[in-house]
Length: 285
Image (cartoon, rainbow, N blue to C red):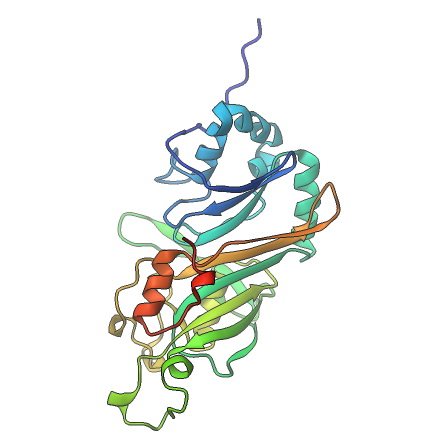
């Protein structure tokens, strides 16, 4: 009797993966913050993918193993460890191939919510700043890490942003920038972001480009002359970035479908601490 081939990813039933939707072709995951997407250095067995390989007593792992390394075991995109929100994972080769083409041809809607230090001027707009990945020295003991830098030699990167609420408009609608400093609130905003491209750390770098800073981001810091001082803000619970909406054409039915994830309660509570109003209907219970 032939022994079954070993799985490339170690199943780990202890990793609980919130599945928002599942059908024969794909999964929609609502990833919590703090969970890495795939195995890597320091996370050989506690990633989202390890949890998926254990789903349904290992049945899903067999499907993802069939997709193999060439199709990234079904992973079509990733979220940073500290970013929460929506991910789509393919279960069949045909679904993966169709969705991969749609990602490459920018037919996937990817929207985010972010709590930032600073208030964008203008209140809505488009950031087009090319990004390039570079290797830099990481924190002590971590060796080198990847970062993104803005350069003309980089790849095209496009982020559309809109200010949903800010400390200026929410708490002081008529307050001018010339008001005495003690009467001005700490500048912060809740932003809705749509990315037309999917570059490494795109939102975090593009926000700095418009003189904002995604709170909780320790990798990318404002420059001294930006006027932004993250230490002046209440300590954030984590990176204040959430993948809130994912839309695409279903690879089998051909129908446009979308999924939404409300702002997690930890980010909503932090936004409230900054004086930002978030409607209850848009907060995850």
